Image (cartoon, rainbow, N blue to C red; front, side):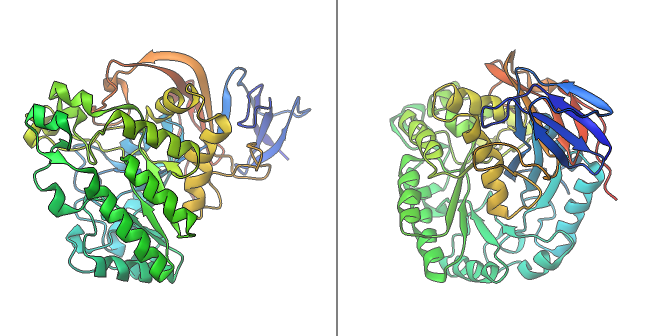
Length: 441
């Protein structure tokens, strides 16, 4: 057997120093300490964490139609630099990904780019309009084999439509990812509803607008025995609702964004639209509850909700600015800052919530493979991210691979850097720089 790479001296999430040998088929051929093998290339990972490639269930790649903000090419380059080997592209493109033709286009663009796996997310309703179901079965049966459906950016507010969607995807073990936002309670809303919103003169976005939809949808999922995933959980009350639903055996999973684990509504005092996001930044108490929920397993995974926007859409008055933040290239350092350095997660926990759990939710067989003790898996596809937790840097979004620079961490000092990424055995990032993409057959 010919080996292409031997990664030596790195520490896997189980805390063990482990050498990793990758073969010409792009698989992990051997794992162990001081492996007595030879490879075409040797990479010293001493002092670094060797993680399974990260998986993001919530990414906006904008293409087709909005390629002035991002493309599948630039978005997956940003993902690769962030340590991701799989991303799930949300449906709010132009045209909307509500047909087999559009999801297949996104799927093919991802394969042509070759930086990460790209899994299109199909719309639940036609045009995200919330009026009638999209071509769910056709999207699932397409070359993209879509299993995740979401109107993200819009809530599936009609309970009858939500029930029908949950029933529909149950037939092929798919799931609905809900953007929990009661539209009547958030008309004109600009930030979290609180004393601060009154002080700043910005229309408030109440926590109950999110929590009421979650409560409804976990009950609907229970009623039809289907799977529902809650996007970008942002309030303490939402965490409690999801915790209760899981205690009842309801098939619910949930995600939290890095920015909701770090930033609070206080940043809105600057009136800088870079902090305008949906759902809005919440209170300190919400941030702490979200961190605890991620640590104890109530929240399953971290979803970046990477939402690139042009400068024209963000560098303007708060009231007209677009909602959203970039986040693929800073996700792991923010998780290190909020969860590892606080003692809430070890690196096994990070690998679980950023790789194994999202892969399990989507039912991926070649992503996020992690042993029960937190080690890599021999024989698995070599999707690997090597991370230096000691590296410190000041965030400069103009240096990111993303076409957009609306990062809320601009100028913030963080620790951690993805130095190398192997995607299906191909070294696509080396020394923190993009290298050669993988070429699918």
